[in-house]
Amino acid sequence: MHKTLEKKRAWLWLSVLLILFILISYFAFSKQPKDYPNYVSDSPSPTGIKAFYTYLKDKKEVKRWSHSPEKLPKNEDGHLLLMVEPYFIPEKEEMEAYLAFMEKGNTILLFHTNPKGMFDIEIEHLSSDEYLGDDLRVIDKNGSGYRADLHSPIRLQSNEKDDVLLKDDAGVLALKRSFGKGQLIVSNSPEWIINGSILDADHLSLILSLMNEEENTNLLFDEYIHGAQNSSTFFTLYPKWFLLLMLQGVLIAILWLLARGKRFGPIFIPREESVRFSDEGIRALSAWYIRGRRYHESLLIQADYVKLLIQERWGIPVSKEWKDLSAPLERKWTNIPAQEIKTFLIELITILQKENINKQEYLLWSKKLDRLRKEVEES
Image (cartoon, rainbow, N blue to C red):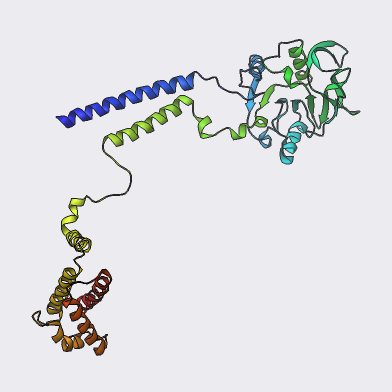
């Protein structure tokens, strides 16, 4: 009855702890705002571009592209790949794949604060902050004026074959360059397209004018340049609620095993299973003789035990005195010279006749008697 009550009490506490853990985990995970990277198409934060992605999705076919550029469609034209503020400069092979994509008749629209190093774009730095700020004047290729925020201290360098699309008093803000059958459109103002400022000034009009430079039927948002190729980890592949359930399941399994009495570690043999068959009693008795300095009595017991073994193994009667064992031992103890055996017996008789012996003598003769015991047992 008492054990049943203890089990019920253990399960009650286990249930209480589990409920507390679930409540704490719920409030810890559900109430924390999610952190989104900048310039990604699924980010609703002010620095994301989800608003523009949603706006375009209602009007044309729009997809996110998270694969390497080598997999871009090269046998079709009419695609527009939107690249917004890449986190890194693509490798040489990747740049060649982007060029092959354009040469087949597709368009890349690149918004980058500093596009140097991509597609052989050259830049120039402004010498002052005179042309930076909010609500500044921008001119398109037709001479029409727009208002826009300009915060990039960089202007683009155009050549004779480039088509200047947007500019201000300080230089080129956007240009178009041909690559085979396709086009590259570059702008130095990615801040126009983010959620927090796309509706400010004439940003949306400027973005749409750049997109409408070339006819396109399919629009791709490039997320590969934002590290999407490395995002498929265990913690991002599954939703947080599923990971939380998995963690709770692991904890429940551990607590259940503990409640069932399961233990993990080395196996210890209970003392009562081995003590009756061990030499623990002999060890305790010998320790008692040593602590009581009863060296002489202990040595007499060892000598009598060895003499008993000699009778059992070699047939020499135990009634014989040590002084009479010289000849029989010489016949049996063949690996020891006869003179050494005689000396051993004489010294043994002397030490056994002494009333008091010290610890050093006791240890020395214990070893000698143990040597004789092993010889008798192994013969």
